[in-house]
Image (tube, rainbow, N blue to C red; front, top):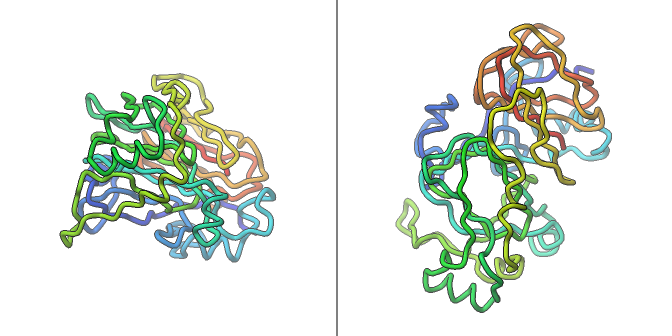
Length: 324
């Protein structure tokens, strides 16, 4: 069986808060703007990635994994769907203040779907850019509902300044928002469940107010005070290390790779029991495969089937290595 890594083409999402930096900085060729998100590695029905290299060229990733479930690895034996979703997000405007359910809540109330725990790696940030992560003080459901309804919810939320290279871990139940000026890579459970608490009274393309989900949001939200130091799991800054762990939880493990050599070098993968996803966030280079070399540049995303012990790369490249 062919376990050669292959390149993916993303699915695009054109939400009203998006901009044009994914096209300008990451070479995404969407047919229209604003371009809010590119779902780089996904089998979620709301946006499926396609293979654009090798023997599976042209096929949806979901179809490749249905036929070759072993690509997911022994950890996911018996499954055929990707358990995670990797995306790029360009927030030209503030995203809604929102919260995601846990797996247990989603299974019970959302027809067996997954919940959504996620992490953000900041690729770029405008001066003064911030994220919202939880609350500045203890709150009750009644207080939050009142703040959401009268437009003062931001008064009790915890704002965290961000810079390029920072990473944040957002557990299901954390009230949060990516704010204007942030360009991030998001790694998450394969879920598209979002409960909005507040959306600045914005209207969609048809002039309608975007729906809120107050009751469900208040059922799942963690209303305790948030410690920003615990949410920020990785501090941005230059490093010469080949690999550093950015975030780790039961759903995914994320490492930052710095490939400085222009000569091909093997980089070991942490485990052969799971697939890997390589997201190129800076630079240009190549990945060696069984059939030759796969050019890589900023914005490219590669799926590495399980059972690969290493990948051979030349740079200079900076990548996020994501394991399920």
